[in-house]
Amino acid sequence: MSRAFVKESDQELAALPERVVSPHPNLVTLAGLKQIESQVQSLEEERSAARVADDRATLARVERDLRYWMQRRASARLIEPAATPDAVRFGVRVTVRFADGSERAFRLVGEDEADPARGLVSWASPIGTTLMGAVVGDELEVLGRPAEIISLES
Image (tube, rainbow, N blue to C red; front, side, top):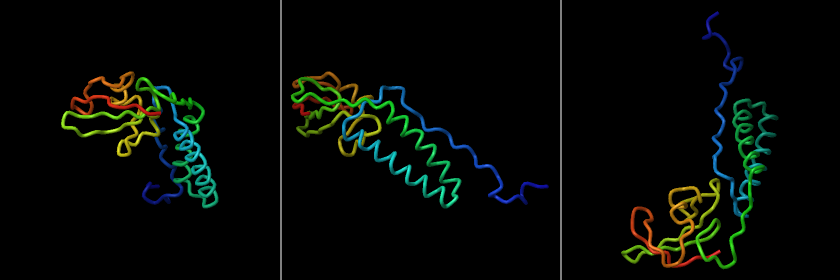
C-alpha cells in the first residue's frame, strides 16, 4: 500500500532534536534560578494538558523542552555577587562610557537568563568575557568601540 493512503495519525512523529546544552558551567543569579523553576513548572502544566488532549506532537516538544530545563535546574550553580564589587564578576552590573560620552550598562548573568535588550548579557558571551575581571577606570573595547568602565554595582 502506498504511504499516501496512510492516515497522518498512524505515522510515527519525527523525533525532535534535543536542545543543545552549553558546555559552560551553568552559573545563575537568583532571578535566573527563578526563571528556570518557572519554565519547569509551566512545561509540566503544558505536558499535563497535552496528555489530556492526546496531542502527541505537543507532548513530544514539551517533553524535549522539559528534559532541557530539568537538566539546567539540576546543574544550576547559584552565584551571589559581592555587596560592593571591586571588579566585574558574575552578577555584577557594569556601566561603561564610550568616547562620544554615551553610556551603557550590562549585568553579567547566566546563559539562559541573557536578554541583551535589557542589558543582561551572558558571562560566557564575547561582551561578558571582555568585561570579566575589569575594574573601574579600565579602558577596553565594547561593542567594537573603545569604552571606559565607570561604575560597578551588585
